[in-house]
Image (tube, rainbow, N blue to C red; front, side, top):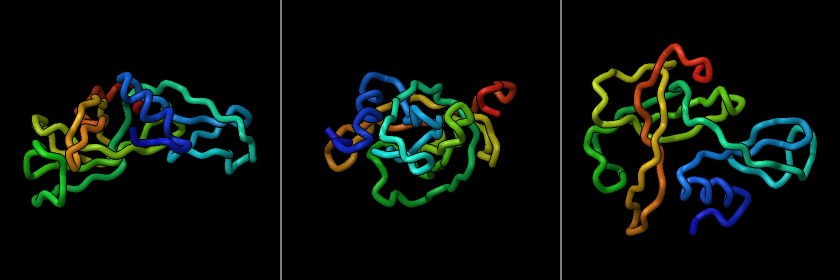
Amino acid sequence: MKGLGADAPYWQALQQGQLKLQQCSDCSQWHWPAVWRCGECGSWEQQWREVTPRGRIYSWTRSHYDFGAPKGLPLPYVSVVVELAEAGNLRLLGHLAANSDKQPAIGMAVEGELFHCEVDGESIPAWRWQPGNTTTEAAQ
């Protein structure tokens, strides 16, 4: 299994269909990528909190070539970086759902869904983002 380092709980949560991200137990700073020790306060005490996969597009790009993309990802595809307000504005990568008829835009509200894709013969969990409800508090 991938993720035998500080990020192991992230990958374990994904296997269970959950999004869990790391937060310092002492100063409440969110961390991604995962850390062993908080860079803000120096604490070694980190906890993993379940987070709703909902946020806003921070950045995006449309790819017209596969560049080693997972099998089954139709061309062109849109890669997105999503900012999660519920987790201190941490950012996660993924792609915009191919069936979305909305043009991607910075600030667009999105909701994530887990799916498994094949990369180099291995099935791994990944995020697919759908345009979401723009009135959702957590996405603001």
